[in-house]
Image 1 (cartoon, rainbow over the protein chains, first blue to last red):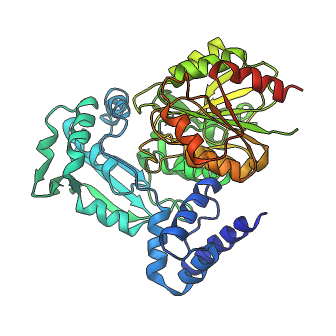
Image 2 (tube, rainbow over the protein chains, first blue to last red):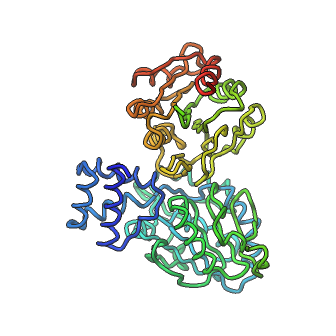
Image 3 (spheres, rainbow over the protein chains, first blue to last red):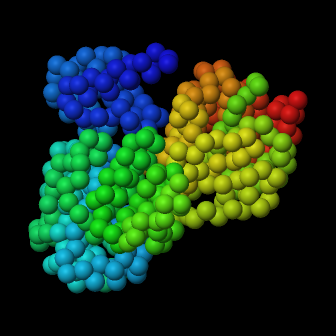
Amino acid sequence: MDNEQIEITLLLEAIYQKYGYDFRNYAGAHIKRRIRHFAASSGLGSISAVQHKIIYDLATFEALLNDLSINVTEMFRDPSFFQAIRSEVIPILKTYPHIKIWHAGCSTGEEVYSMVILLIEEGLYDRTQIYATDFSETALKKAKDGIIPLAYLKKYTENYQKAGGKNSFSDYFTAQYDAAILDRSLQKQIVFANHNLSTDAIFGEMQMIVCRNVLIYFNQNLQNKVMQLFHDSLRPGGILCLGAKEGLKSAPVNNNFNILTAKEKIFMKRYEPPNKEVIS
Amino acid sequence: MKYDAIVIGCSFGGLHALETIFTDLSAALPVPIIVVQHISPDNDSFLAEHLNKISALTVKEADDKEELKAGTVYIAPPNYHLLVENDRSLALSVEDKVNFSRPAIDVLFDSAADVFKRKLIGIILTGANNDGSLGLKKIKKKKGLVIVQDPQGAEAKMMPAAAINTCQVDHIIPLAEIAAYLNELLNK
């Protein structure tokens, strides 16, 4: 192990020991990049200096935590995914009297609000409960604020339309001087909560789980563990949505899912477990 | 083996440049090649499929956690950064754009330089911004081999020219000769 790797390992161990956030099984190349970036931008210089500071200074830790959580998201990102939800998933969800959806790793909420708008337009929102979770309190707060910088409105409007939006994107927000605020009514059926996929357990049984571009940040072991958690949190016939370039691949629960649409990485948990022969 | 991997970065003019190189690269290439071509988020897998058809090498879009295999070319998918892990598997990430790009060449080159160090060949081809210059400099710093397409004759000169300005390049090679150079270097 080279020196920098030693420093990173010790920093992640310190974070876990002190604060209970477990980044030790995150994908290495990505974490290294974020840590190096923080060491430079914070002015602390070395990774060991960061380790020392975060143990004694909560504010520095919170800044690091913010840097480590990925916040690159937009409303109706990958419009073709939302098109596929409309055409392949909504007909299935319509068969349930009550729908529970978990957005795991919801970050600042853009994807959640996109799903809400889609559900409203498909007439399903009133019987849906959404759980939007993330380990970052900062991200959750931003999600609850529901603010869209004006500069993003054009892109979001384009995405909304490409995603098959039935109304007008502007129906869902009010524009003020320097920002747009999403209608409070969109939050009616959303519970925002702190949940850490590395460390926390099942909290309910879902008809659908959406976790897009989060698993890529976990190493293979943690991915397998989280996939198991998702599997166990889904009703039979439940839907799992991953990011455009993610997949089940070698996760042991792979056998327990059917592919609903291959291109958009939407999967369905089988009603019956496969034969023992298939698993072994 | 003297080298364990090749990384290539390009943008404007990249399709033709990659075609030229991959048509002529030997099927017996003993290393993997990882490519970042700047590509719009709406694009599909056309580039990988097209290059796969015209090349003796296997060309595919990179998958997260995929292990690198000799003689295979991995193309960064649209809207994701591509990195290399210490165990030589590939990693995808959705971070902010770097040099206005995602995938960004600097991100791949930086990460690959850490992993392969002196056993890395870094190549910058035609392109319209300076993404890749700093990454190439890092490869050079780790004592890898650094090659730039001759800007003379490049469809877009800015990327190779910026690379030449930013770091001590080992070889400046006209596009048509790059494949032959690599074949000779790696198939001794």
